[in-house]
Length: 122
Length: 108
Image 1 (cartoon, rainbow over the protein chains, first blue to last red):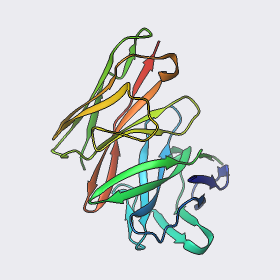
Image 2: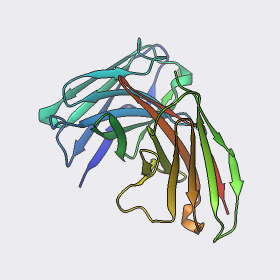
Image 3: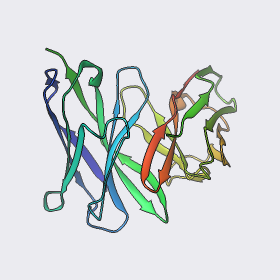
Image 4: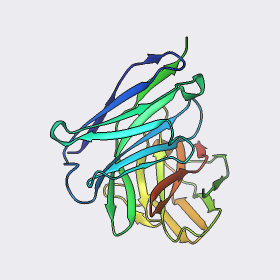
């Protein structure tokens, strides 16, 4: 059974750096075709993709946020970490991690974590 | 970046009704289109991948079709447990970049 769980601070101050951890089980991020992605959802708004890291350590980022994001993985711990710098109140959102299965150029977010709420406020 | 539009933004239907949601991409995305269901307070759940393939374990009343720029998601017979917001999502594969539609809220 594949599961993912997000963890991190519930509250950060403006200008601070946010660090979120996705701990997963049921698959290995060193297996061909496996990826983990981060997605966020501001209250009452739509989903927004943030970043992806794949089995080959390749990293991909949202065009609009790439200067603020870093994604990394620790395969031995089954964890993926997302850092986002210079946090602002508009970054207040639910942050999700999701497994992506990649095959023949297709990408599918097939299992999601429950999400973690991040509020940016002084 | 590719833009996604969805219509309607919300709808109200009765149990047993056929419900159709459309999603349009700003350029040809072949069939790189997935559909997700999000119930209030919950994470999204994958229903349809690559435009028309039903994810394992998803009821057969859900279906998807389309290619290029125009896609359709259908619930053949709406059930009370289908109350949710439905999102389409497109992706580019080289490099992978993902865009979600604005969502369609379905009520009974």
